[in-house]
Length: 483
Image (cartoon, rainbow, N blue to C red):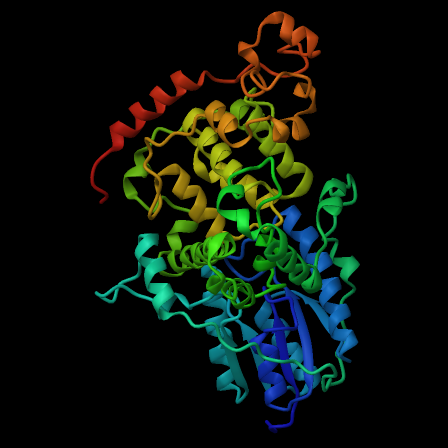
């Protein structure tokens, strides 16, 4: 192949222009660019994105296409098996190189390894890059040369090793190869129509690279000083809300790190907030580290003893949880926020996860599947890793006996009930004292608030104290060494 033949920049979970190593490689190689996105739902083992993720993907591709067009490049969309699509596009464009950013899902690793070998055997240049993580999973290991299984030492080692790479600049005008025929994005039907359940998501998010950079800038300007405390307060706008932008690669973790690290030398509250932000980026890396080295964590208990856990067959409880009608206001608020916005506050994710697993005794995989379908930031590594953390079955997991009390969690982190009142409006007139435990409110208080338990708002589906004892008993039955 000629060194001036086109390069295919294969976009995946790096839907941005800035700080995109694959795109930079094509620019530096001085090859004309073919920009390609493949919707691959057919390669063996692939897990198809859930409904909320598909909504985000549609709009992120729209945004990327517009940004590329501004630089003179058309985004080609194709659907099918990645290997077959690449072979077709290479034939249509006479491309001599393919560049992409790596993904870490088990099926993606297997697929991309085969694709790279095949391309090289065919005489093409094929290069993959780290466009999604701070450090590659194989770049950080214990003193014994093993993968990390506990976060704190992982975080300490990452701080020692990591140096943010220099931001690569992309010209305002790119050298474009003639674009091959493209699918119509609308024809992919990524957006819901009948019914259109995405109205709340549309109101809650602005998608794309510019929105991601704006969100980071706003956070570092307004909320970072209070982040260590406010990140646990669902009643406040104290989180970054960068998770879907990071998952789809509309912003890179290097960009976030570079921006946050600038505040560390300031000292004081802003530096403390920036340190918390960097730690959260490292937690994201840690989950990908685990997924890469222990791929079973996506679908199987990481701790084998949990294979004997007596999960309950509780379809009614699962449905009540999914629909936000458990009778526990903080839990119901979280599930309703999720359904409406495609996102849930992180503290509440832990509370609702604990409630499903430990109060209702429902397998963590049911919760993971629901989050996969309803979260705009659904990410296999983070979703599975965090669910197993809550369950106690994962690496560096919370002890199983740490069972979140939904009442005390609500009272501590939503003390005025503002979060519950927003998402469970039928309880909005209850006094603060009763907002997280309406079943204990006197009849006259309920009447004054216009609440009839069992009619306007459900009675609790389970007694938490009894459920806690049941969960602890089940845990004690399987306690012991992992096989």
